[in-house]
Each structure stands twice: as structure tokens, then as C-alpha cells.
Length: 292
Ligand SMILES: Cc1ncc(C[n+]2csc(CCOP(=O)(O)OP(=O)(O)O)c2C)c(N)n1
Ligand code: SF4
Image 1: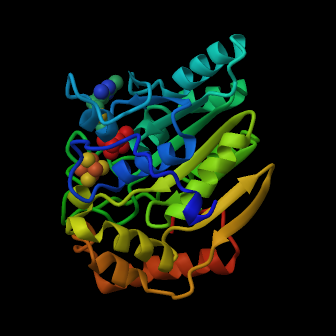
Image 2 (image 1 turned 180 degrees about the vertical axis):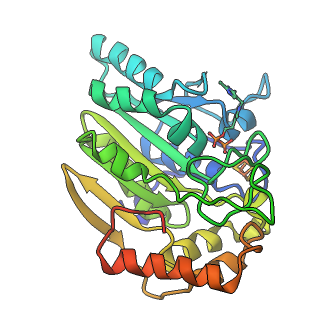
């Protein structure tokens, strides 16, 4: 996909998301690729919350709000219905947060991949349960504070490696992405849309409200995540993993952490330890792990 091929049509616009919300951007970019011929599933999360102010909605395509744990099941069911009617040209896409994906919805996602129906599951990862007040999720990174891991405490587990989890299902297509690299992300959505089976895209979506940075810095924060090696842009197609973007400049993870408030209780020694872990993973070629 080239810049000039991107649709000017906005199918998700004027939402009630916070200023600078990258989760909103993830939905907007996805719908630019899929166009009007799609149906969306959104469980309880920020996206459903900012979209459901009756009688208004920012979605200009059909969308259903689903129970928190049931995104995978809903995607399979809708896709099965379209298959039965011979309408496999319609894209079925889910937008689930990190809590809805890695914690409460994980068995539904697993079952859906196993079921083999055609859908795109997008996990927009803002690294906590943001909609209900920034609680820690299974994808909150080591070292971050949340309202359930408040300073001077912090999250002491690493992020679950969702890419490896979905890869273990022999999924035909999976990828990581970041909203700060829109072309890379949109290309992945386009590729997923061509697959006649289940697909999964895990997009890092910086959240000014939950991470503690100014709304005009969301793109910069995502770039820093990738340039510091904290987040990697990879793609897994039929079992083959490839890096889709190698940053031309390298930043330290200390720089990335300093740009937000949620890591500020970490000592320089703790940050150095995290940096060493990132470097070790990269040296070992562990591109699978987009966790830092
Ligand atoms: C079964 C159930 N438990 C709890 C909730 C309350 N709830 C609604 S949204 C939400 C947080 C969602 O977090 P995440 O999936 O990470 O998405 P985000 O809010 O960050 O966009 C929670 C706990 C719910 N709606 N249903
Ligand atoms: S809390 Fe974060 S993810 Fe939720 S709407 Fe606000 S900026 Fe977006």
C-alpha cells in the first residue's frame, strides 16, 4: 500500500476519545483499509465507550458491542453466518483492548482461531484496562504503575507474549504494529484481509491519559517505543517470521520511559536492567517477543 492509495473516506470520525488517543487512530486507519464492506465487533473497552452516545456513533459501518469476553466467539459467529450466505467478501473485524484480549477474552480468541473462520482480530494495546480507570492487565509492561499497582509499587510481571500465543495455534497470519507507523500497520491490515482464515494484529496504541504524556505526543511516544527496541514491528505468515521495520536510529529505553509518568518510580539501575533485557533479546534474535 502506498500513501496515494489510502482512502480519504473517514469511516470512524468524531468520537469521544481523549485528545491524542491512538486507539481511536487504530480504528480509523483499519477502516480506511477495509472500507464500507465490513462489520465490526467491539467488546467493553474505550472504543465501545467513546462510540456509544445514542443516537450518535463515530462508526460509519455496522458495529456491534459485544460482551467483554466474547470478541473471538462473535467474530467466528458473524463470519460463519456470512459464509453460509456466500458473502465471504465482507470483512469481519474485532477491536479489543489488551485486557479484553490477553486476560478475559483469551479463551474466546483461542477457540476462534481454532475454528478457522475468516476474521481480523485487532488487539489495540494501551497496556492497561484504561476505560475503567487504568488497572493493570496481562499486557502492562514490567515497571509501569497503574491504579492497581500504584507507586512506589509497580508491575512486576512482563507482558504476555501474545504473538507467541497466537502463533502456537498455527494461525495463518499474525503481526505486531504501532499506530505511529501507519503505513506499516495498514499494510498488515490489508494482508490480513486477503487471508481466508483467522488473523491477528497486535497494535501498540499509546494512551496519553493512562501513560502520562501530553496528547500531542502520542505519535512520538510510539516511535520511541520502536526505536528503543521496547516494541518490535514483525509479521508472521504461514509460520515464517519477518521484521517489517528496522528503526534507523536507536534510542535508549531510559529516553522512552522519561517521556511518560508511569515509569518515573524506577531507579536508574532498574532501567538499566530493562535495557539489558531488551538488548539480550535482540542479540538472541528473539524477534518474536515484542515485549521488551
Ligand atoms: C465481564 C465484565 N467485567 C468487567 C467489565 C468492566 N469493564 C468494561 S471496559 C473494562 C476495561 C477494558 O480494558 P481493555 O480491554 O484493556 O480496553 P481499554 O479500556 O483499555 O480500551 C472493564 C474492566 C465488563 N464490562 N464486563
Ligand atoms: S483512556 Fe487512553 S485509550 Fe481510552 S480513550 Fe483515553 S486516550 Fe484513548
